[in-house]
Amino acid sequence: MNPKKVNMLLLIGFIISAATCFLLCYLLIDKSISYKYLDDSNSSTILALDKVVSLLQSDWKGMSTQEVLKKMESERNRKGKESIVIDVNSEFGVIWFDEIGFEFESGKLKRIKI
Image (cartoon, rainbow, N blue to C red; front, side):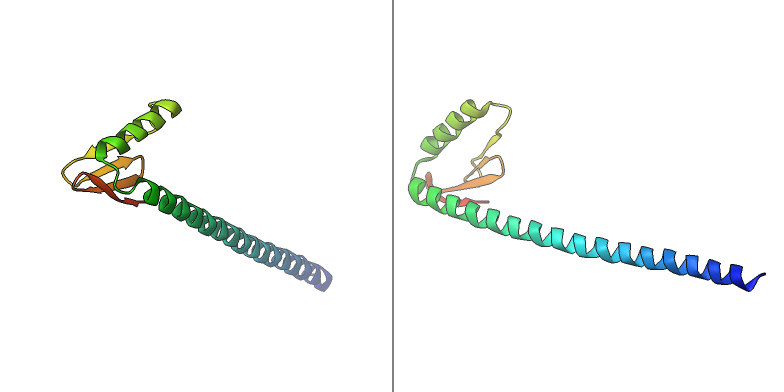
């Protein structure tokens, strides 16, 4: 084989390898930046949710099961019955409002769990 052709093939192989390496590095950096933004967004969402739960818990703490259930039913009716699931578990003293647990002790709201 002609040495010029060999050199040309080696050069083309090097260029393809370098371009592939550059692309993989770019994708890795882009992915890590995206994950950082996602993590920051999740952290701020969790903090905001904790503040809302704390506010709701302090305002509703001590409410009877029936009062809390009435408020939940009202919200479910306002949003549409299919959009929110309310599950009353009397055995464990918990009412689930979708994925949020309202824990009761002696018929009174004790805490809200996410």
